[in-house]
Image (tube, rainbow, N blue to C red):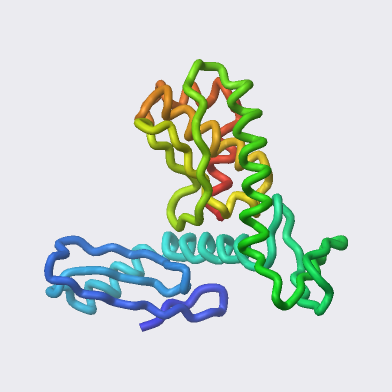
Length: 212
């Protein structure tokens, strides 16, 4: 089965599970429409469900395509560069291009840059924070589903290495968000009020980050 949208055909993957009582439709990174349903759902019912949700599925496709575009290529501090592998040593930026040696470890370079920048921004935001909180320890690692994590008990804030690819404003938002968990451990209205105290336009960055 396929779904046609904008002169393209997208595969529909149907997965039937014994434990499922409801039917779920998702568009994943592979741009396939994944339908998860029960063992007893008929193809006729699935076809009608897809037809009834056509506009919503198209929006999900658009979202995933924008997300893929925003994550492809070489990014550094919010700017996208054309990556060119060369025999020259190290890494060199020139306009909208970045020249990288064939043997150069880009992930290692990202980590070195992140350690410096993330600590600098943590210190800055901590000094300007509106509430008194313990100074958090910083950890950096790659994460697939979160931009940041705060361990309330140990006061450790872990930031996603991928933030080094984005504009510093997004990094600041995540730092402020995680520091605020040292004030309120949940995502209650009180939590967001403190976030807003420290970043009045936080909603803008929160929404935009969904496209990454």
